Every structure is written in C-alpha cells, then in structure tokens.
Image 1 (cartoon, rainbow, N blue to C red):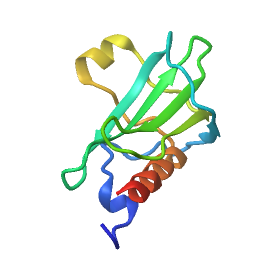
Image 2 (cartoon, helix red, strand yellow; image 1 turned 180 degrees about the horizontal axis):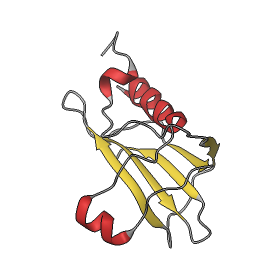
Image 3 (cartoon, helix red, strand yellow; image 1 turned 180 degrees about the vertical axis):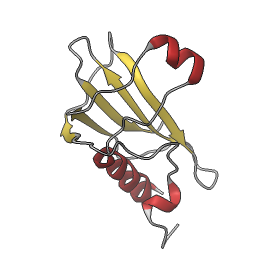
Length: 119
C-alpha cells in the first residue's frame, strides 16, 4: 500500500463533527469489563486479518479506545477520548448499528495512521 494516504484506505460513514474538541491520550492497556461498547469497526486490507478499533464507555462516562487485531501481530494501542459526547442509545445501536458521526477528527487521524503503519 505504499503511496496510499490514510484517507485512501479508511472509509468513514459520516464526516467528523464540525466543532470537535476531542482530545486523545495514550494510556496503559485497560479492561473493558463492565463498560458499554460505544463504537466498533474492523477494516480488512489485501486479504490480511482485520484491524480493529473499539470504543468503550465506563460507568463514569469516560471513553476508552483500543486498536487491535485478533489474527495479526500488530502494535496494539489503548487511548482515552475526552471532550466528546457520543451518541450512545442502546435501542438505536441495536436497530441501526454504531454511528461514527461523533468520533473526533483527532481519533480518526490516529486510527488511520495506525492502519497505514500496520499494512
């Protein structure tokens, strides 16, 4: 995939929020036990195993992100997001799947850079 920019390899369903003040920070690996899944995606490239991003929300409303792959040896990362208000309504998620409309540009850029580095 040399020469591909991250925007050429990762597709988002919606544009990022206009007034996104989302701040991301790398953290130590975390346990998602007891958290609600707020967003998840898997992207497959050239027959390789999927690269994944999951976002979890704890009871206090904090958001935690994990970049990972089940079948590929990759550099896995854990992050937190602050300054965003996810649209997380369990009935809506069950009916329509996860929406990426609330995901800030900073996190999109970080995920896209990780995907490019792992492909």
